[in-house]
Length: 101
Image (cartoon, rainbow, N blue to C red; front, top):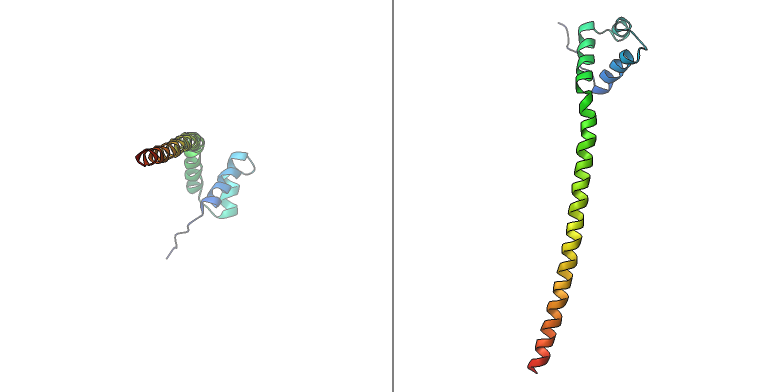
């Protein structure tokens, strides 16, 4: 009974990078790691297909950071307005209390 092997993403990336860098051929990689050419070619195709997503993540992170900065500024502004309103309210209450006496 043959057992299905599983490989970590790090291992797959290492194998594909060896191929893409030209350090080793597909045949060399297959012999060294006892892999079939079909599996290695599948990993390579998947790697190349998903490579653009790596750079899209950078754009998404930048957009999120910009949004967070905007929200932090808004929170700061609203906190300041609340403090001013509280101070004005306490001053008006004190003035009313003083006039009632």
